[in-house]
Amino acid sequence: MRSRRRPALLLLTLLLAGCSGVDGLSADAPRLSDAERESVQVQVEKALEQKRFNLAWNQEVKAGADRGRLERIALEALRARSGHAEDMFSALREKHGALSADSRKAVTLQREAAQREGRWSRALEIEMLTADDPPAYSAAWSVYRDAPPDVAPDLLTTITDARSDHEESSD
Image (cartoon, rainbow, N blue to C red; front, side, top):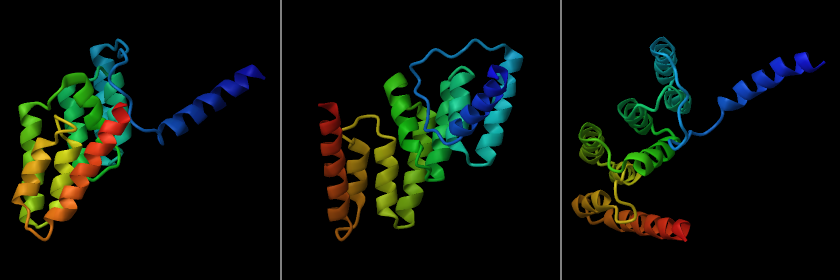
């Protein structure tokens, strides 16, 4: 009886993992051989193609948590407006501090595109999700300063609410 339950439990675990959030970066990654890591990275690419960003992230964490690859996954999730992007950038910030220069440039390009298209709330969201300095949100304040006067009040509310939320969660 016990041997029949194990495959069912494994299948249930795999199904639930597909619905999960994103793994943190504090845990030690298992030691994988180069061939095993390459196999995992192939699966990461498949998950990215399917826009399954949390699956891609979690597998990359298990493959060794390569910072560059994790930043790429987070940037793709941000571009696609995945709800997992916030947790990814938070995990990166906790583990590594500021984003790498290349990733920061990619964020800037996304924000600038949103601003050119008049999507000021999206530009602000991009900078807040990827902020290196919460609750200061200095890059978010630059979006606010550039915004048209009729949009600025809503942006200000978003920044100050986020600041309050951050401070409350720190207590």
